Length: 469
Image (cartoon, rainbow, N blue to C red):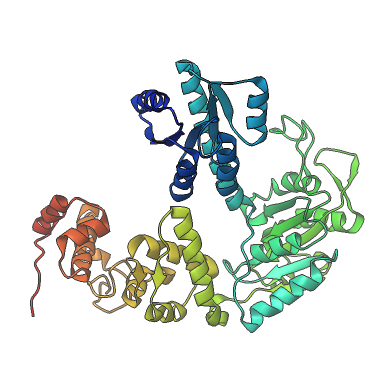
């Protein structure tokens, strides 16, 4: 429900506006002077302000200026019984969304309020999207390996040198490429990314170089390729080791001659592109096996940046984890949680088969499943690093294979159907939460977001009983 504030020194106007807007299901507050109105704006969050211009203590225009200095995106609708074109223009110049004369026309008032709220929502959504799309995450960490990468980026980025970025999946190769672009002279131009592993070999050439209409069966119109889209900017070829040999030959020619030809076309097109490439493969072995061209390797590998595995820089885990924690909680609109000292040590000791990407996913999981302070027990119970341990496995019987050995995986043979497995998992999860909360049913119900009566039914269904010493 949108929250509105009315600032007007006429009681009759305030009462009329409030009655109309509350009837339209808006939450409305009102105040009779600009000084107190401005104080409310600074203390509370409003979606829209309707403000009189001529008032005692503080003029409405002054309220508008000071309020927008504090909350630039707050929509203002100015109202006045002495409305003129000049007044409306002045209000607009100072940042007001619209101007309405007294007495206000009901239909115009409601339409203006709705439009102002819609614009406010669009501004907020746009800012969130821009932050998510354009934000390049910092390369976090201060280990020797990371400091060396940062120094290399500072030296190499301003040049035109091609860079080959190597490292395991999830280690942050794309982030290195983004910073090479951000710190280059091409940063005002586009960074175009191509995941060579995600594009079928028969389509990769069309994706990179474009095609002419009619060049093959499904080519119903001309298509611009990634090389052309990146003209003047940077082209990032991710997973270059998965590119077909025929495409490799054309990429080599483009790097040598700075020219491309669209599939099915004859005209050569000049392109000014800086190429960055990344792979998780050993390209020298791929060359020996005949899967990668030696000459292309040497063209791409002018500068090599190797991104280390997370287990090679465990000292960076606390800084990375806290950054993820703050960002994810902010995206979810919740207070930032904390990780206990023992919990952080537990994080550092995990195997991290999925690298930094796995750490991000795990922090998100812990935020969802844990309390305000993430404990060591929650890390081991909920983290599920590498898929080896299920939720609640630490203490509640989810380990063991069909031979009775402790392998870290669930004994699925004992379940005759899917419903049996779901009941078992639900029972163990509820039991774990109850024991964790010392069998406080109200707190457990809040934790797992169900009604207390529903939880009592589950306890009865699964025959759960508190074990006393």
